Amino acid sequence: MEPWEEDGPEVVKRFMYVNRKAPYGTIYALECLEVVLIAAAFDQDVSVVFADDGVFQIKKNQDTTAIGMKNFSNTYRALDDYDVEKIYVEQESLDARGLTADDLIIPVEVLNAESLSEIMAQQDVVISS
Image (tube, rainbow, N blue to C red; front, side, top):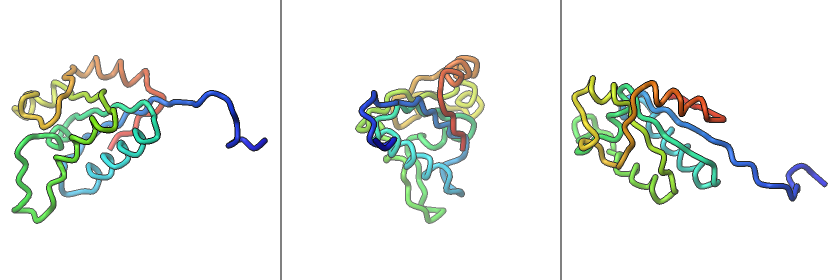
């Protein structure tokens, strides 16, 4: 029997994707979102963190007209369709940017850096962009 033909239990890994970059100007934010959706589609245990300038990825009312890029922020609403329910935002990052959870396009759990660190320690894989 080949390794890919095993009948054993399916292995589910805990993946955490940490978004630290602003939504535009690089490809990191959009590509990370795509990877999150793919991992979730394969029934992995996915959680997403927004910290530093990454909090701007999910800010309401983004207007990208001046930079000539497509606004993809509404795509974050698809996370719910993919059963990605563990979405965290670092409190200190919101505070430093004058934002609150009400300024965000999707529901999130706001946690301080220490609490996020504890959750990160429980993951099998942490990918930061």
